[in-house]
Amino acid sequence: MGDITIKIPQDQDLELLLLLLKRLNIKYTADVQEGTLEPLNREDNALSAKYAGKLSSATSEALLLQIEDSRSKWERNI
Image (cartoon, rainbow, N blue to C red; front, side, top):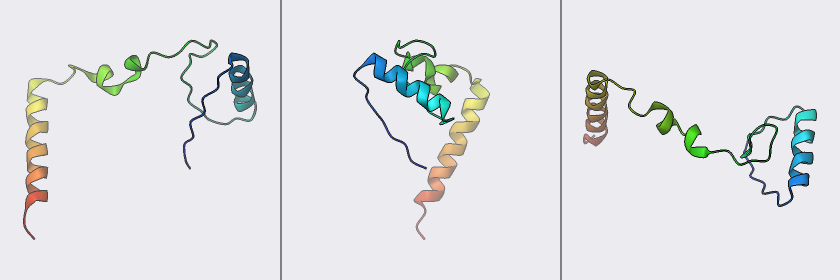
């Protein structure tokens, strides 16, 4: 399945399209908040914002070692 992006210039057209998508049970993501036509704050939805500062130093060290090991495996001459 693919993704499409549609820019709707008229608010009333956007409302109609969202109602139609719901009626037809078509999954979608919108850049507007549910029930309003206000734009979403994309920074709040970013995974980097969600998980920033959540790793302990021990976990981050283990991840860095794993990344270095993975890189060294790819750099080997075959």
